[in-house]
Length: 216
View 1 (cartoon, rainbow, N blue to C red):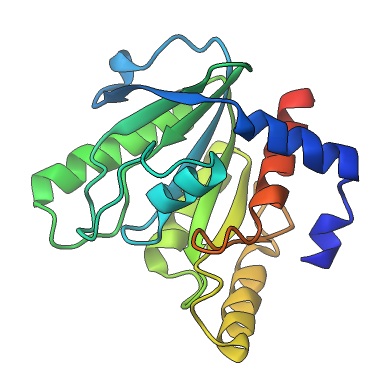
View 2 (cartoon, rainbow, N blue to C red; view 1 turned 180 degrees about the horizontal axis):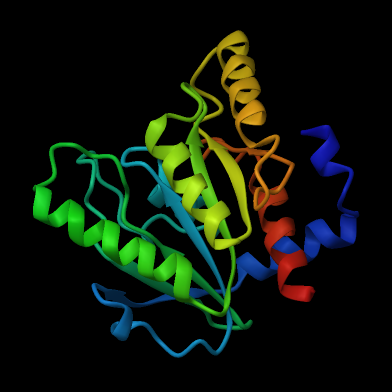
């Protein structure tokens, strides 16, 4: 984390804090690409397997408790949920969770098609944050999504979630596996961001990273 933190000055950290201290609003949920709002602002998307803590991360990032719906039932997010900043030209897209085997097969096919169409055809998509569970590291579904992002030349960065859950050795092992997985991937950002939605660990770094994207 110290290496990532050294990238940002105190002013940049504060700019990131201010960006997410201002309100975000839910716009709509989209089940088709045609339902998406105009590509009129920078978009960042959050992708991850079901139960990785994606909605909790979005809520922690924006300093809210209910912007994104959280559930103990994996696979609840079944559409592209759109959230717009009310002060800056920034849009957050919460993508359907992937890899949940108990979802109906036809529903999984619909999600997969929607995710593929969004990732490969959205011109204002600046970066995808791929969430990896800090207790386990990347699995086959995560690698499949990274493969698709590499093929589509869509920039992505790994956010390790639930960093407070494993012990130190388990976390270090999961991080090492993740680093090894992205080492030679062409579209992957080289740095990981470790986070915990419960303790808010890593949120200021993630906010600063997104703020820097917006300023470029």
